[in-house]
Image (tube, rainbow, N blue to C red; front, top):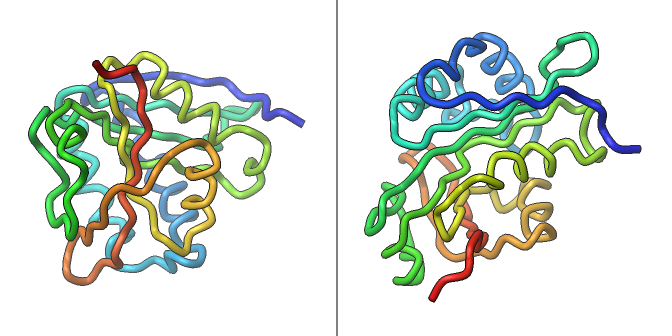
Length: 181
């Protein structure tokens, strides 16, 4: 059965008006295996990253609320300029991807009872539908179920990164958004 929810879109720093709710859901989901509340997924790390990211160009947040107004999922991302790439990348992406502007999907988080009902895909599609960048990128833990879902949705593994010394290695995946010439 498809998920029924209210989808909202916000941009820039004002997107963080619901930061407390986003943080609570983030911590709930990233306490699950294989993340197990590792250092990369601690509250302070999330808050610091998210405040910095919300101030950057192209930051967009998409939220989904259940019929009673409870946050059941969210996704957000931002623009990465042409020629730029993830910090701490262990392998390089194909040159045409590095050379192009990209939209980086930073988070896609769905509360457990709302999974497997199309909400994650709806959130991500809503986030990416209006993007003008030719590519979207994201990082996923190789052992996470989300990694396989992204691949099923057409994302391709193109590089590997390790955000910091106490973080696991992550697969960087790419989805072509617009035809390139």
